[in-house]
Amino acid sequence: MPRSLGADEPAVQYSDVSYSYPDGTSALDGITLTLPKHALIGVIGPNGAGKSSLAKLTINLFDKYRGSIKLLGRELRQYTTQQIADTVSFITQNPKEMFITGIVREEAELLPKTRGSSNPRKKALEALHKAGLDDLANSSVDTLSGGQSRMLTLASTVFVSDSKIIILDEPEYGIDLGIQETLLNYISQLRAEGKTVIILTHNLDMTLLCDYIVLMAEGKIIKMGHPSEIYEDQAMLQRYSLDQPQLYSIFREAWKHHSYIKNIDVLLHYLLAALQSSPDDGYES
Ligand SMILES: Nc1ncnc2c1ncn2[C@@H]1O[C@H](COP(=O)(O)OP(=O)(O)OP(=O)(O)O)[C@@H](O)[C@H]1O
Ligand SMILES: [Mg+2]
Image (cartoon, rainbow, N blue to C red):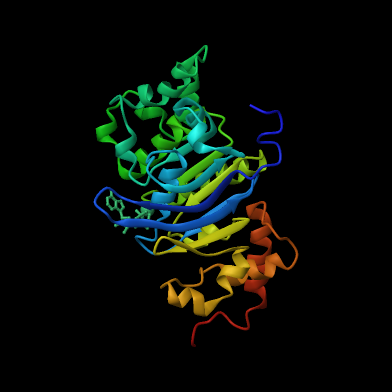
């Protein structure tokens, strides 16, 4: 590889990418998009917009696409399967389709083993601990709830690898608020470490923490911008059946002073200020 590759290149660069499934369904139609490195990026849009298809193309799951996809400056088609797996961690929308071994701990050991870790079991147990799954280490993956399955996908990929690019397809789906908070903290930590984290989601409040948001619809990119540029455009949101996130007004205050909200404490400050400045408690007497 030439020395400069990956140095100042974007994390992912799509140029005129189109893809249709074997049954003829068009999923992506002329996608041109640059995702910068070291950023948290939210991808939103209605059902069927093409979000998951775009993510799957990015890990080369489908090879019959048109156009060019570059990962860290290098054409995806030139990567080996192993190189892609080392570069990108991907969590699919349907956790159960990811499991291979049948046992929770073995699932988390797979990646450390293939990477030649000296102590895969230790790595796996640490990842399971982070995911809150210690007690289920010896259970069958079939016995996990939806949220526990979701956490196991994280434990067996992101928590045990050091990929530069992490793609999470609806990571919040099926997990309760406590675990969502753990997840959000973890995502913020990954960003702070300089990773590129791409979240595909219907949870618009979650995207307020992003550096950029990409709005997709009907296989196309409608707009990419800072969350304020996306959520200020009410007409555009309405066109794609999206509402402003519930926490938008609090973030709007905070963005006047911080272009990116690094931690929840900053947000709490604005939340408290917003509460204190409300004229009454909102209830009729
Ligand atoms: N395996 C498949 N075979 C045929 N068509 C598919 C397949 N998977 C997805 N599609 C179609 O491709 C288009 C894009 O779907 P995709 O799953 O990428 O959307 P999405 O934005 O992820 O939607 P959601 O928010 O519901 O997850 C849709 O028209 C969908 O019906
Ligand atoms: Mg999807």
